[in-house]
Length: 506
Image 1: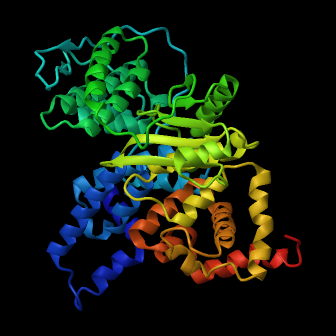
Image 2: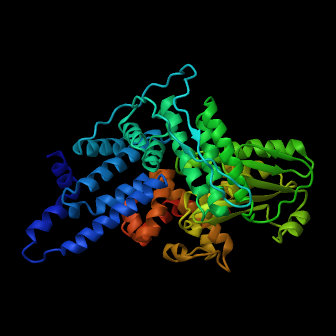
Image 3: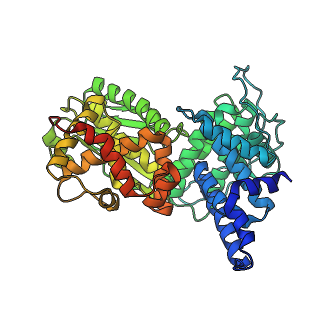
């Protein structure tokens, strides 16, 4: 009964109209089922990459065609739970969306429990003892261990989502358990649940590395997964032992993956969990950049999406060049640039990350580094397809200092007076940097990005960008901001950012 109520509540007038107009036009049942199955496949894909809002949108769009399909409603409940967790951990709370998502879960019959109060437990006993079975030859003397559970640990569920993950783990459905644990988040798991999650990730990675078709890219992905898994269980000696064996095997197979560009290692290297900083002999600068890079990476992920899932593997190389001339000679970029980023993606995974910077840039740490680091993070957040160019540039510049951002906003009125701005429909359609009016392009991109962020926050802006890829910009504006068209946005944006700035000096 509750499921039927939810279907009616979510579908609203469109659902009722389906019956009142049935005499005039009956939907093709085959087309309905295809649409439902496609929505479920899309939702599963979004959940797998921690994009629950998109999963919810895909399912709600077809809820009137689902007709109470049990698998559909189960997936919808799972998506709501993941979205609720994302909303509750977001830096900027959205009480209305949280309450709405909770109501939908209640209608589906899902019990939403409050997050447990964090406690500091004593070091737990090892909950499982993996064993190394006969190891298949991977070629090139690379062997990855195959791990199998001897006995599933006794795990007390901490939440509905974690309970589902535990149930999947006990049935040997490690891929499902991995996804459900990830949706719950490590912060809400007990020590035993973290061990189960780590086991799933190590087991799945071993399967991929042992597969005859495992290539360098697949192995590089396994390196990242195993590294993150081991961070969950620093006290679990058995999993650490097996995981380290698997890391060596995966790293050997990943060795053939090509870097974006050869690393120039002039002098010492400062390494952190996610970065290798090649500082050219200025260790103080290298350490400063490394510290800022780790902090900046975390802040950028949390600003646009949520906490990072784990350290980057492969690490991001940051190469610091002594002068503008040295930078230009080594990179082939104009000497006037203060930095650039490059990321190599294969099968939606980063196989190399690199940032080049100039040591003679006086604002390297507060401006150039976070700007280029944003480009690298966005490659993770938009692995399927990069965000619109105007938005990516706007987001990158907004990572800089208030003084840097102010340079663009103060220059905007001059660009408007001199005809350097574009209609937003034209700006949104640009796939690359324009050949002319480049100053206006940057200032307008920053201003429009900032305008939309002020309406509903950074993370909603990221959802909006994902929607533009699925529905187009006009429909995405309606879905996320209730703005009827790019023209309507342009009028509102100009009123807020140009009308009040008339007469200002650039």
